[in-house]
Length: 130
Image: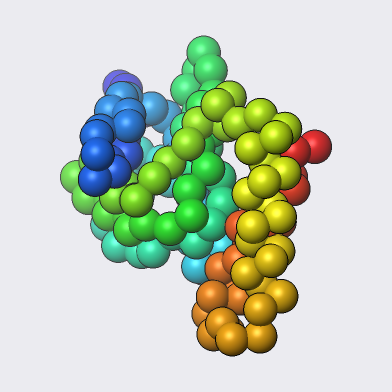
């Protein structure tokens, strides 16, 4: 019996990935969440972080800033404004993104929620940079 389920990541511009997988780890507000076949139905929100799609042969990782997640009937649907595969990042892009986020977070006129999200973005981008 197969342990696979379907994952699809969609942005407003395109379908980023649609494939069969054995496990997905998502960065939700509740923390890192692993999803396997026959997971309980779920609707949640993504915080900035890395989505990891795990198969027997390989592992794909995508950086997301936000989005929604729905899992039901062994179909995982992730809607996000953008998801960028980690292989597509370079040192210059990472540094620029970190600097922009740090500049925004140092601005005293943003909400606590924005500070929370930016801090996760900065932490994730610094981890990717390593």
